[in-house]
Amino acid sequence: MSDGPARPVLPRGKPAFDQDPHRVREIAERNLEAAIGREVRNFRRQQGMTVADLANVTGLSIGMLSKIENGNTSPSLTTLQILSHAFSVPLTAFFRSYEERREAQHVKAGEHLEIERRGTRAGHQYHLLGHIGSNSSGVVVEPYLITLTTESDTFPTFQHDGLELLYMLEGEVDYRHGDRVYPLKPGDSLFFDADAPHGPEVLVRLPARYLSVIAYPQR
Image (cartoon, rainbow, N blue to C red; front, side, top):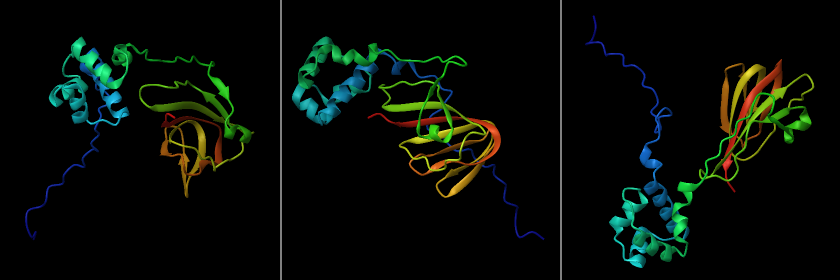
């Protein structure tokens, strides 16, 4: 006999993410008011000022400055001129990110650039799939296609700044990160802090190819 009604089995919830990767960025984030607001906020922070400090210097209200920084209002030329004097920047500086060109790189099959990195000495072929240097995100991303062959040595002690994502395309390797070893087969991925020693420890099935995407802050 049961001691009471059976408890319902609840489905395991999926992890909640703050950002929906399929969401189209709202138009408001790309318009002129938002671009001006970002520049005003950046200049204020660069000069170590709070919104209240800026209000005292310019005579503009805290509420108005908050609306400008959040892109919720279109400031007049007179207001922009007041702000330009407060920051000692030209008026055109507020339109910089709106006019800034957003880069993209298209690399066709066979046209990727082979480069030398630390692993090249171990017989690892690195093909850089694209590179965008200084950009508004504050992050540099380096995508590589890495190929391991019978001429490649194992090298499980790479270390560098940033985060790294591996995605296995072909072959099999046992990949070390810190004190753990992960068997990687086609379709597997590994995401890790690249400051810990890492690299392929056992070349199980060759040739092996995987994507490596490294991200680190701009310097």
